[in-house]
Length: 163
Image (cartoon, rainbow, N blue to C red; front, top):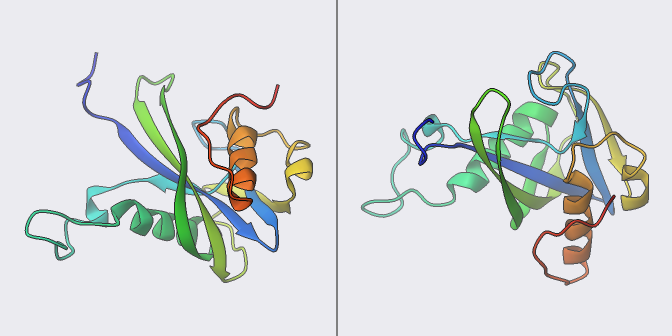
């Protein structure tokens, strides 16, 4: 077993614009979940903070928010704001790599969708009902449902909603 304390850290964004959610289809050449629909996001890299000035003597703050803004800009060409936590999940991929995913929601701030073809090859702005028609990665619909409820002021932890 690998070091039990080392994980890939991934942060994702459920982006809201005009009451719709952005979903993207993972490129067919992707190793994990090719051709499946999800929300934009990506991995935390040490370069996301080590070359920046620390916010206190010891720490960098808002690292995940910065990573999410970078990943969303790279992957779909959008600016986002009002980032807030939705839920988290952990998995061990078939290649043995453990991942911790932090799912957030954010509001669209600027830009038009421009896809990074190596990451994603299609996109759609969908309502919650429309999202059910897509081949979403397991759990994503439940996260969209949570985000939708949060927009109405309802807070909860993740639970299986869809079947």
